[in-house]
Image 1: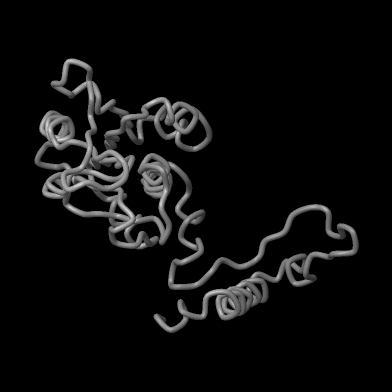
Image 2: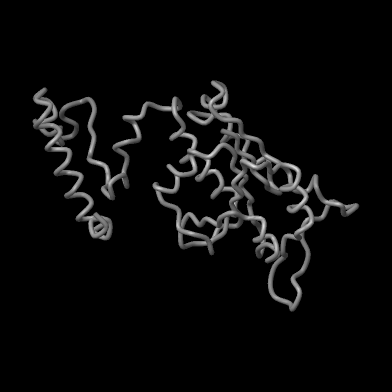
Length: 222
């Protein structure tokens, strides 16, 4: 898979791409991730990418020219262009699975007051990672990238994500490690029993219990 990210703050991605599972996935060739500075596509002599919005209002608006030219330069027949915006489709685990099967993703990070409305015509989809507003789409694009890359075959074992929270509209069951007793809190005895059927039943019940307590809306979808 190839992921291209368009942003006016490319340095924000330095740590994200050089640590943990993302770095290992890149090093092993499972994914290629490129960060493009939108300013490099500006035809303005001062490399400006934003201006005041017509009709007044607060903040600056990203201009269409640099972003259109960037997408034109990068996009292929296999590309899926995604706009990061709080007005987009709420992001879910099912969408992460869908995107992990794509060959090429282009993520456009908005910033400031927003982006020229005509930029929307470039996008195959618009995605929101939650009902709140960030200063820009950079963090959202990292969330999308992280959630997608971990699902690419070979990046992590399939068992590590098949039982993730939100698969089958259930939250994940509780997990424990050493020591067995920590400050009076003990690991449930069934997990120490070695009885795989009982352990599986315990985890299923705990998953249902946790979902009912914290996200009953998910159970309604089952």
